Length: 404
Image 1 (cartoon, rainbow, N blue to C red):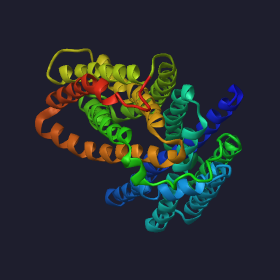
Image 2: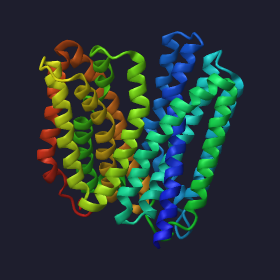
Image 3: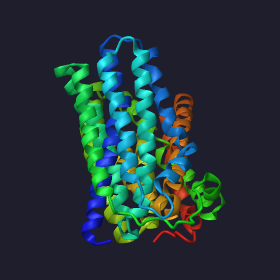
C-alpha cells in the first residue's frame, strides 16, 4: 500500500480508537461523578463495574464477528461492521440521554447495549489494523490505539462532565453520541479498500485455531508477565499521592491534564521507538524505566527523605508515560503474532487476557498494600519488571513474528 494509503488507515484508526474510548471514559470516568453529584449512593454507582463484562468476554464472539468481517473471496467488511454496531452504540447513548438518570437500571441497560456494541466494533477495528497496516507501521498503529484511548478517555471523562454541568445530562450525552457517530463514520471511509480480500478457501476464524499456534501460546505467557510487571503498582498510585498529602483536587488535576499529556506523549514516543529500535528494545526499556520509577516510590514510602515533587513525578511517569510507551510496543507485537486471516480473534485474545489480569491485579494490590504497607508493596512492584526484563529475550524469541 502507498504511503498515502497507510496515512489514511492510521487516521481512521485514531478516529475509531478515540470513539471507543469516549464511551469508556464517559462510562467509567464521567458517569460515576455525575451520579454522585445527583446524590446516588455508592452501592448503586458500583453497578457500573458490570459494564466491563462485554470487554472481558468479547473474545467469545470474536470468531463470528471476524468470520463476517472477512468473507471468503470478497472485500473485508470492516467499515460496514463498524457502522452497524456503531449505530447501535450511538442509539444506546441517545436512549440513555433521553431516559435521564433516575431510575438507574434502565440507563444501565442502555449502557450495557452500548458496551456490547463498542466491544464488538473493537474486534473489527483491531482485525482491520492487523490486515491493513504494513509491519513497518505497526508501532504507529498501536500509538493510535493507546494514544486514542487517552484522548477519548479525556473527552468522555472530562469534556463530558463540563457539557453535563453546562447543558444537562441529555444534551451532554447526545453530544458524545454525535461525536462517536462522526468518528466511526471517518473510520468507515478510511477502511474502504485498505485490506486485501481473503482467499475463497480460507479456514473459518476460531479460538481453537489461534491456540494451536505456538507463538500465540507463548505470546500469552509474555503478555501475562508484562501486564503484571507494568500494571502491578498502578492501582495504588492515586492513594499513595493522597497519603503523601496532596489534596484530592490536585490529584484529580494531575490524573487528568498531566496524565493525558504524558500518556499521549508516551504513545507517540512508543510508536516512533518501535519503528526505530524494534519491539523488544522498547519493551525492555519500558520495564527498566518502570522499575526505576516504582523503586523511587518504594524508597520514599520506606522513609528515605526524597522531595515530594520527585515522588509525584515518578508516579505520573509510571502510571502514564511508561505505561503508554510499553503497551504501544506490546500491542505492536500483538499485531505481529496475529494471523491476518483472523486478526480480530488473535488480537482480541491478547486484549482479553490483559483486561482480566488487570482486574485481578487491582484486587491483589489493594490487599498487599493494606497489610504490608506502601514500602513493601512498591518494592515488590519494582522487582517484577526487572525479572520480566531478564526473561524477555527467551520469551520473545518466537518464529514467525519474532520482535525486531
